[in-house]
Amino acid sequence: GLAITVHAGEAAGAENVKVSVEQLGADRIGHGVRAHEDPSVVALLRDRAIPLELCPTSNVQTGAVESLATHPLPDFLRQGVPVTINTDDPGISGITLSSELALAARHFGLTLHDLEQVTHNAATAAFLSPQEKSLLQARIRRGFAAAKRMFLNALTPQEAEQLLVAALNESDLAPEARERIVTEFRKAQNRR
Figure 1 (cartoon, rainbow, N blue to C red):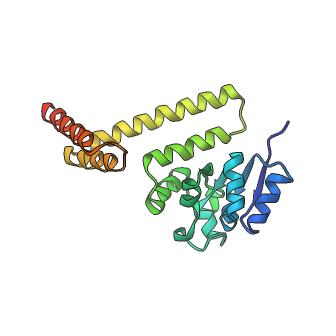
Figure 2 (cartoon, rainbow, N blue to C red):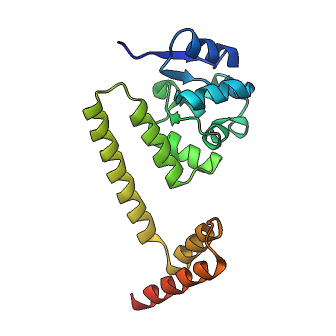
């Protein structure tokens, strides 16, 4: 009944990750960055919802990846693998979890929504009771809601409109609906 984390796919390749899941029964994989070398292993992780505990700074320092530019974290996210962002060895690397999250936003282009997702993934992957996990997930939701409010309040009306237009342009809404939303946004800004 114990949950299992296996350190795999850092020094050894994708096959190491596959064996950890299929033969050792891993519930989580420590690192797993080399899983990207085999699409079938990526599919295995995605389909079984096996989280990868990714440590960007450490992964570069150990040579598991050549550089941040070649780190597979954004690819794993796009492919639906539940990734988490971790520190691995904060004392040796001189990092914190906050600095790793900031690094992920800067180097991988992760949005606040993406950062919330990887943090939610970490809570989901935590070896906690269902009640403890639920409390942790609620705390994460509240924290990110507050961060989003702070972020939005710091924007100028022009910056907020640019974000709104960018989000609408990525939506499936008809152009007329997008235009109505922007018009209503402008009216609301003028009332402020």
